[in-house]
Length: 127
Image 1 (cartoon, one colour):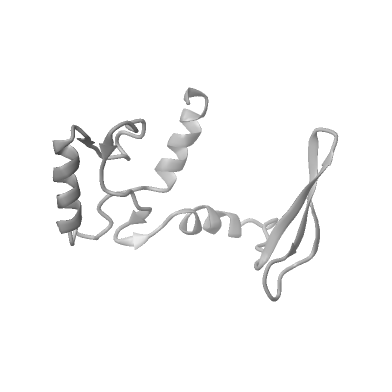
Image 2: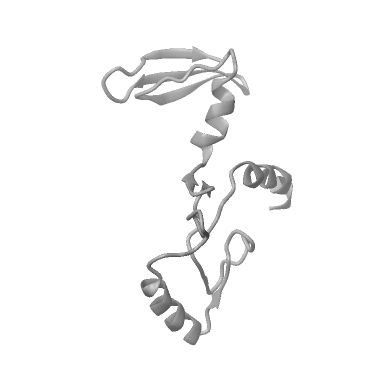
């Protein structure tokens, strides 16, 4: 939607997506996709690059977009987490899941969490 277009573009700029995740840009093991491509194209479907055409969602097909850069997996763990980890007020809590959000009126004041696996944290994290 147009109201989030600018924010969406910032995410795409920070986390690049590609349909060719290898360093050389070559797609390996194409036989399966070639069979599907021929059948779908014969049925009137259109081959597209979903990164270049994110709104092409009707009777389209294409290679899966991956969050890779220079042949290495990227995504939020390689971008946002690195930035967050450099902040003095950031703490990564592992093996923990959110139980509920604590609100005061229309404002969130904390998050109640509980262990998900061994070593998880239980308590309230104030915001």
